[in-house]
Length: 100
Image 1: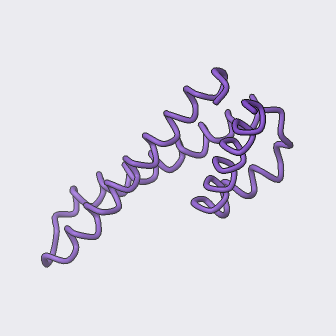
Image 2 (image 1 turned 135 degrees about the horizontal axis):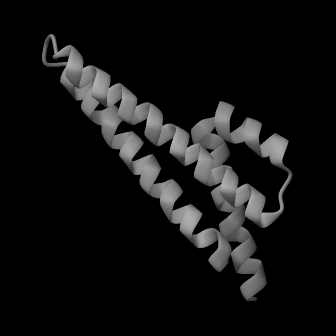
């Protein structure tokens, strides 16, 4: 992977892991009865912020690789897990072709 996209890639993955953790805690806390409203608010904000940061880092990758901004913005924001997965697969595929 190119050095200019390595840091945003790592940060995007970390943000996605944090969003997954917040979602997991949010779902598990609601299954045990009535959870405190403060806990739900904090987990919801964590999920929103982590998801937003994931999209920001993915768009940094799009800009740094010179891809078209608008189609990738729509793919990453509206189809969040699928658009990110496709972009990451393309980046890893580009890496294989340049190494050969």
